[in-house]
Image 1 (cartoon, rainbow, N blue to C red):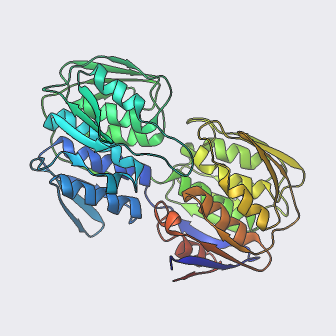
Image 2: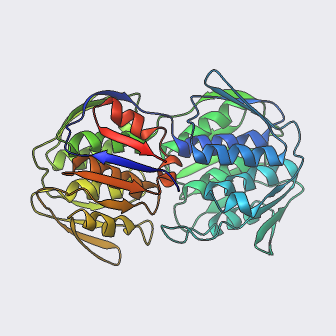
Length: 417
């Protein structure tokens, strides 16, 4: 039986809790180890399912990996094997991040197509178009992307849509290309800037990371580097909402508040008490939040990865709220489970209408994806009675010991086998 979380709700959370490093920054940083024969040392890499999958993948490609006193070391002296197999890629879509580095350094890559995902189709066509613009020959063979290039050549790449992993993949590939590459319509997420900081420490020449136009002047080779991974803004946001939804008083530390501007503005609109510093946020939950409308959009807009959590808070608001999801289809799978706890949510296409209820009732619920599982935990913390959240292996992909952190704030929460 997969593990579940059992929550006895109704306890206002109190205390101080630190944020772990970002999964979505750690994964591309690990993939960047493929760009050099020298070691990459990463501080504070979170211990998560997806990180373990990426390390396994790197080892199959020829990496030596070790972890010592909070520092993770990865070294790919030479690429022994250029294939990312389906059994690994199918469990973690971010495996596709090895594609750009492998082609750039090794000249060839064979990476399984990621396939579907619970929250909708996330195609990698922008990655492939960009690599083709850089001069790679791309073919699809038996469910694998096969890419080849003697040496990539700098070029101008305009993506049809904003893609975070696409920007990261192309930025890594361009770092070793001959000449200058300009990425237009690039993603602006903090994780992009974090990867650019690592690549720069390795000797890459990158300007404009964090804006819609990134310029990369290719270099013949990159060296090793030491880098500290940026804090996880989504974990920070989830912990902030945990304080708010339980009418608690919680201080969340080790974050970058500038990365949370859209969420904090929306919580302020909902009547949540906030004291914001550069690296910490104190949150005091209202007796009942005010209703608000939310539209997800790429950074610096409201993050799609916080949509399920804010919907859970709005489910208890005084009034009617509307949530519009513009990034992924099928991202309202938590709505049906929240309804089992008494939420009044109607979804149609990319819009959810939420009529706030005074309280949630504990119930057995099932997680469908990473952020949906966080939303159900939040609902359980606020609910009257006992909630059991099953399939928490989704949660473990992206949150480091969430139940331990919540428990330190007074939550009655336990993991059951």
